[in-house]
Image (cartoon, rainbow, N blue to C red; front, side, top):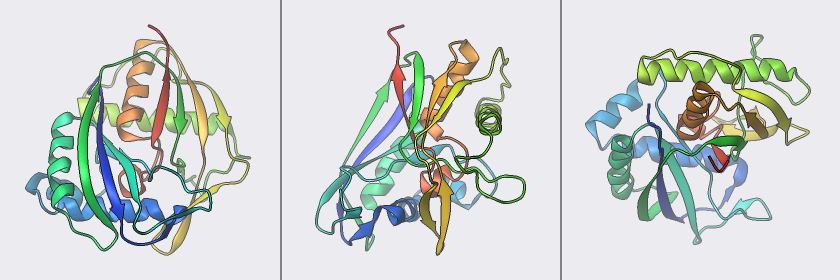
Length: 237
């Protein structure tokens, strides 16, 4: 598992107007299209029910009226578990043509590990409960904390083949940001997610899990919708 934050910054020209609730799906489609141009990425794209190892943000800057504008330039970010994966994406997104996005410039930034104190979701995180219902802000936060921990532990095992040693839970406290679930469009439906602030434990394994969250996102649909894309607050350690 990388102990760096691996990020590809894409500057794009938007070719169609788009509401913020639909833009994550459109970015995901653009990435999927680009993956067909590289044999390794194409194989990864075709795999089902595995962790893909990347996550992406929404467009920036945010539009006050909720609509991204055709003809304007926006920046978005793609993070991955490895720099080598980002380098492949950098090549393919430059080559990809779409009726929605035109890539203008790309830049890879590799940030060294820093001690993480808090994680904030930029894109809503999605959790589906056992009864196939979405997690809502009124649901049990302990259940949410357990799901975040379990998901990131599974990712660590998958990408590093090392189960790690749990000293204490990753999440010390959760602060929900939204009172109502946030809608993200996907296949003509609305996926319900939540924005939150996580206060992260200081032990070594919790820090590894937090770093995994930075590079691959929280919970579900990270590679499809960019769900659970997070940024961090760091301490001076």
